[in-house]
Image (tube, rainbow, N blue to C red; front, side, top):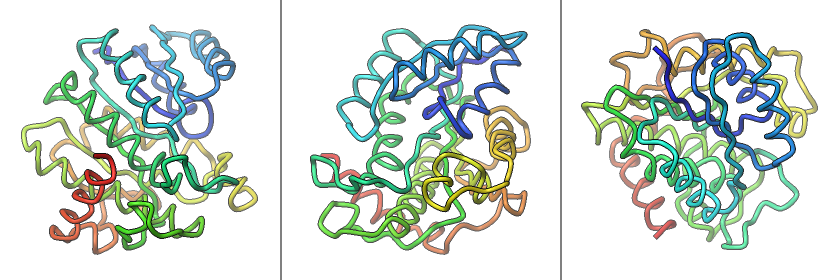
Length: 264
């Protein structure tokens, strides 16, 4: 069955490799990126893959929630159904860690943007659909003051907190939507050879395809059925407990409340 699938951050790294796997299966792909030239180049590369179906491009800078809103409106105007949303776009190290609104860029791109995009697109995601959120093995207790922009954090604390926060929000959404869609938080694999890893850690020999394979499975395979809200750790190759805070319902509620307050 051909599905309509949106992948954010699809112009390089794990998102790009995942898009290639999905294109080869003929799915209708909505690919997001912030650079129009790269988007156009990737679209042409995907269309050249044997068996590729329809490819659409959506340009947005996820450091701007206004851009996220505009992108969501464009998707809603073009589609009445979205089968899978893969919230892959992310950032770790940046020369400008604070946005114009005073938030840490890691919280905005890694958490607020997928939160807002998912919220806007949820009406067209069926109960049989899936939302796949990119988590990480790097998870740290969330400082809600930092999330709100009141406290400054270093690169790793901000990144790790944003990834635990999206893992916690994934569980919250699964509980709020028991009949579906299915929500998954996925660590695609540690230190894969992506631009993010090159910029933050100097590179790695770990194949990006490891991450693309698990995102493909999270989007389509039966092994994720009945596991809504659970965390998949691709380093161990199985569903596993996240950081303990990720299973603490009171702390999850506190983080979700802090997200809503920051975006209000």
